[in-house]
Structure formats: structure tokens, C-alpha cells
Image 1 (cartoon, rainbow, N blue to C red):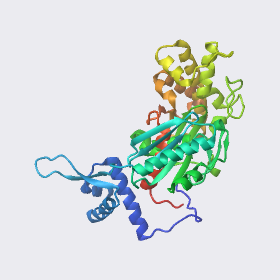
Image 2 (cartoon, rainbow, N blue to C red):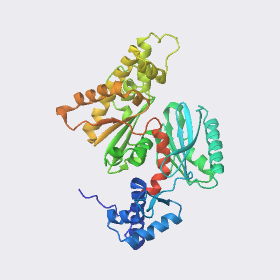
Image 3 (tube, helix red, strand yellow):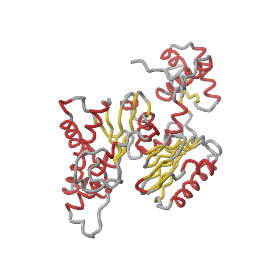
Image 4 (cartoon, rainbow, N blue to C red):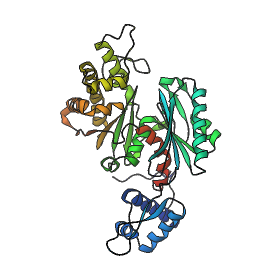
Length: 398
């Protein structure tokens, strides 16, 4: 199906547009296939060798790639091309409900240096600490930082705008991006944590995810966020708030209330807080005794604690029920699950997958559910991706 052209946003193709597209194609071949030779790039792209050589020299001059020597087969070692990953180009800020992480990354998205601190409910204290650490990283890297990406557990209007609300911190229109931008003087992009994680899967994930054109990432934390990728890009919807499936109704009398106070939302049945509530009920920790946090439940389950395993499996069942609704409504190539729960994937995967399969009417569409391919830092890597994606994405009409 052809995509309708938006005449309000369209840019006509000029010679420099074609060159820019070819430049990004070559850069992405080097990023994904490198080290790679000029000849192989020309062969794969059907571009003339002279065109490839001109663009490669431009990429070398701008510091995006460098030449390395491959293994010799007896003669002179071949000259190959790879991304230049000797210095930091982006700073990522993962603003979490409990902890905030700030790190630098190179062009490949590899974390170079990282600092972490407890998130304060007082927004000024948290932002002052964030800005202090960013300034330290910027100064330390001698001008190589090109931008700052921020992921937050809340609703974001647009990458270039700001946060509408972070429910679990009770922050309303906090002006995070603007305050960082004014304090640091560098471009700042901001996104909610689930979309950021989905963006990281798209750009930094394993090939089976990066090569998928349509997928959904379900990010399980104290709440539930979903990042939707359609045709190789994040779907954000009107005002950037698409994907708030954590508040869809899937039942009654959940073990906890969602952030909005409802006992009927997916978040209330399938979040980390829901698992904690189930474990506390099983261990009689609901009457004033100190409750166990989700990380402790994960550790207990790994060590064989039966009640921790029961709480996680029951939570996984509801994760699957919610995913079944996403699959029936959006029919993605695959659905990814992210968050700390992936640490016990072998324990919960059958509950998630079977629950999703059994909740889909007539067995259609197909169920393909896998854990996040980015480990335990998908939203931090998503923050980097907000900056790195601009360097590798093709020319857009917008």
C-alpha cells in the first residue's frame, strides 16, 4: 500500500537531497556491516565507486567514520571502514521513579561512563543534580557531545517539547527539557520511557528486532508503558501520547490501584507493584509489616522461593492478557517485553505466551513474544537513541 504524501510537509527532491539520502544509506551500511570496504558498499548499494568514495571522504572528514585495516590474505591488508567510536557524542538521562542514571555514549550506543543517584520527589533537587552531572560530562569530553536525550516515566508532548505529566512523581509540566537546554546550551530531546526503549530496540537492538518494520515494546515497571513502532518509526499519535495501554480495562478488583486510582487497569494487574502486592499477600506482609520490593522478589524467585514464583507467574498471566489485546488490535510482527521481569524470563515466558494465545479469539493474529534484546538498560539506551537516530535516519518529509 502506497503512503499518501502530506503536501503540507513535503520537500521536493533536489540533487542535494539525493546525495543526502545516499550519504545516510552508506553511513548505515558502515554502522551495521562494518568494518566494510568501499567496494562492498558499492556492490551492495549499486552506487558508482566514485560516488561511494566521495561520500566516504566526507564522512571521514566529519569524524563519523574512520579507516581500519582488515586481515591480510598474503598481500597488503585491505582498508576497511567503521564507525568512529573513540569518543562520546551523546549524553543519555534515564529519569526513573526511584533512581536517575546519566551516561555518555559513542556513535554505536555503547555506554562509556555512567553516574546514578536516587530520584528526589522535589523536582528542583533532581534537576539540579542532573544538570550538575551533565555539565561534568560535557566538560570532560572537550566539546564532542552533540546532544542530550532524556527518557521519563510519563507523558511527553513531543521530542522537542516537554513532559506533560509524570504520575508516580506527581510532576505536572515540569519543563525538564527546557531547563536542561538553558543550563547546558546543547540540543535536548525528550521521550517517555517506553517509546525511548522501543527506539533503542529499533536502532541498537539485535537484528531480529531491528529488521522488523512493526513491533510493540511493553515496558513493565511500577506502571506499564508501550512503545509502538510502525513501518520502522515510533508511532506517537496526536500530541505524542499514543501507547497509553497501561490504563486499558482488563478486569475488576486488581491487587493494587493504577496511578489514576482504578482497580480495573492493565497496570493494576500486571505491573511490578501488582507482583509486589501479590507476594505481600502470600506472605502476610499487608498489615503494617515491611513489604518486599520487586527486585527482592526477582532474587527470591531465582533462588527457588515458591511464593515469589507464584506472584510473578500470576502477574505474567495478566501481562499476556494485555498483550493479546495489543496483538488483536495492531497485529505487530513481534511484541517485546522489557523491564526487570526479563531477568526471570524462563520462569514467566510460558505464562505470558500461553495467556496471550488463549485470550486471542480464533487464534488470529499470530503470537510472537520475546524479551527485550537490550538487557536491563533499554530506556537509558533509548535516551541515547534520541540523539543518535538523527545521525543515521534518512531524510524525512517533516
